[in-house]
Amino acid sequence: MKPGMINRTIEFIKTLYKDEEFVPLHAPRFWGHEKKYTADCIDSTFVSSVGKFVDEFEKKCAAYCGAKYAVAAVNGTAALHMALVLKGIGVGDGVITQPLSFVATANAIHYTGAQPVFVDVDRDTMSLSPDKLEQFLKTEVVLQQGVACHKLSGLKLRACIVMHTLGHPGRVVELRKICDLWGLVLIEDAAESMGSFLSGRHVGTFGTMGVLSFNGNKIITTGGGGMLLFNDEALARQAKHLTTTAKIPHPWEYAHDAVGYNYRMPNLNAALGLAQLEQLDKFLVSKRVVAETYKQFFVKEDVEFVCEPIDAASNYWLNAIILKDRGERDAFLEATNKAKVMTRPLWKLLNTLNPYQRSFKTNLDNAQWLEDRVVNIPSSVAR
Ligand SMILES: *Cc1c(COP(=O)(O)O)cnc(C)c1O
Image 1 (tube, helix red, strand yellow):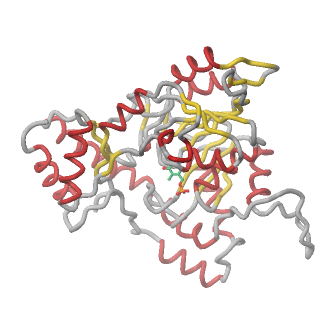
Image 2 (image 1 turned 90 degrees about the horizontal axis):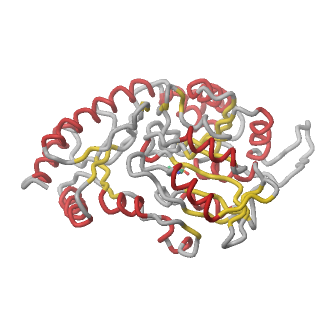
Image 3 (image 1 turned 180 degrees about the vertical axis):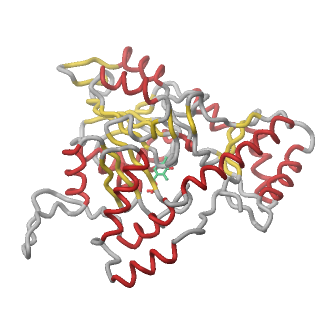
């Protein structure tokens, strides 16, 4: 890196986010009707598992994303778990995913009793690589009566979860084709990518199911929350049923026809979400401006800035730069965090975490390359 690059970056970020003594990675902004809608919700007394805000939030999210149906959940992790439950995935099954993700992706697989199988990402999208997936399937998997069997472990590979890393759309069109050929259900972990589009279509709508998160650090928040996106009505109806304890409607009986889950988003959170959703387009404009400003700054510094893939409109949830090696990365992390400018590396690869060290995996060189070099920099909507 050029001499003084880190200090100039710190100064630059402090001018971007002027009034913040400590500059966080991603702070929520409550500049709309958040107080009004949550107060209305409290006044109605329906703050919990029933109420009009949840239904309205589901409808508006579905419309925004161009999905036929949306089912709200208590958080993104629960929504991912539910997506796998809906397809009956469990013990003896394998679910392909990328090693470069937040731990929730692998945990959701583990909750079902299935095992994650890690396949490498592409360097440019940082998301699951269709080429690596195809290579893995052709060499290590056989189709037996329409089921993809992993030769080494005997696992039945039933699904594939792609994660749209940092909000940038992954190569879902190619992934969908491969998954269809091999009988794999494609699930999109779009937790980070509300407001991101590929060829004009919102991410999370290319696979059989998509999952959004509204955790406090995401582009819009409900405090905690998640959403399942569907185009299939039967799946959506079953999702609603299973996330609400699988209760059969009845005036007074507690009758449940399956092992259900208490995964429903409370009405109070949905009220907050409605106010946030109203501002999403404004947030997206601001985030593009911030990304463009960073891009111009880092060009002059000879530092690679992560841009949206071709044909994609990314929400630029977290801006990122790619440094030369792990040493540069650590020096950058050290100095910026000391100067009260919050920066973070990517996640440690999931296959290196204690619970997933024995999981099956392909060569993961691209994921490792990215882990060693990528740093996330402050990305809140600018004031
Ligand atoms: C945030 C996130 C989730 C789920 O988050 P919740 O906090 O449970 O809402 C899942 N996957 C990825 C990649 C995420 O970034």
